[in-house]
Image (tube, rainbow over all chains, first blue to last red):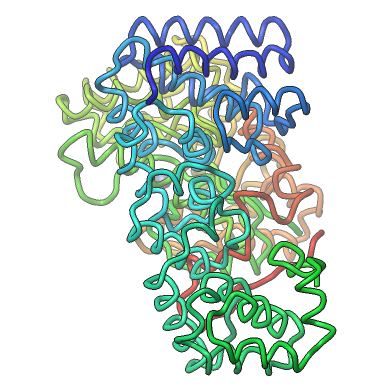
Length: 292
Length: 296
Ligand SMILES: [Zn+2]
């Protein structure tokens, strides 16, 4: 697992990204902060540097080159920086710099920084989750992010990150997925969504759908993605969605039925040959559904 | 007409207030750190308060289409609790350096004690170090002397008056504030401090150049619509549109914009950004549909 060597390597990776995007004096400021933080990890250097980062670097999107992205993938498989901005890289870099000085208090320090952070800081520090050493030790902080009522903070943990699928227990994972729908967020950007589907999650989602329907409301078509493999228990619900006048809903039910173990699913799919053909030849999947 | 209310304690207001403020044209508010009605007993509750006004309150405002900024500081009442004050001073630099912080404030005098003066001075130094404007709370009792003393001390600490807003100004204090080159802010309360008709007289007499109108709405009897209501009254009293715009929008933007943290583009360009999204229904409850606003 992660060691001091990993941290040093990751610090180098992030600093390289900044070096290619910032002016010399901005980079000098970054380096100076890292030195001060490493010298006194518990002092005020870390919080102040995290706060000032956006003023010093600006908030432009990071936008890695193909080469940089490949290097990132090699250093940390699954790392997705597509939603990151430059000041977020600086903030993550500062937190990592504090590790060198005091390894055993890292998780507590990260937790304190997140709790005292304004929204921009929290989003940045949560984007860094896949890069922190001792991944298990920061789990409690990650769980706080999933509980947040602030959608950008929730999404900084849940979306485009390998961390939840690697670290979350089934109960935490299920809470995260259901919460996405609850706060009007989306499931597609959750990494390993299909791999971590489970019977309990399917049941929670179907219960949620029933609750919404009873109140005369709709549910996100994405919900059925996590139900498909357990669809033999929920054939009535899938049929109901399949018969929906909404094209997106009908397609989502068809996609779920295509993974459903119940032999009747095939009968239903064959009743709409054009739709069924699009699924078989890959023209319709959960990623293209949104645009449908 | 768009308005800025540069002194609001939104942490104590309801979502109805936010809705009404947005509907009345308020595009941005500034929330100064202050006393919460009951004394805080330890730095932990102060820390959580500052995190709250910088974090969740800002998000809550954004959900109603209002940009939310903060001032960070130790208020004069709690400066009298020396143990608390010492601890709070330790955490202020960390909070003052955060995004969306437009000033150190509201600081100044309450009873004008020695401890109040000590922490007032320390925070003026902090403002200079952090290169931030300052919002001054002038005392309600012995106001005239308290305001003069505050300005004397600010000058001793070599802060530029055009980077300092003296708040809760009234007829008794406005002349000195204006002549010494400070911004003069007026809190328009329904019953006390300053009222809208008196404000009209002041704008007539002193001109709109350095004057700022705010509501100072908090948990007491106060009106979060004071700024738009005063603007309407000023317009009815034939104050020019330009002058109304200055005292209810432009002057506050100039004064607090000196922080580099508050720009017209924040609310003028993007109706929706990462932080200001309307599609998250987190302040809505089951059965409510999120309000969706068309792009500007
Ligand atoms: Zn106030």
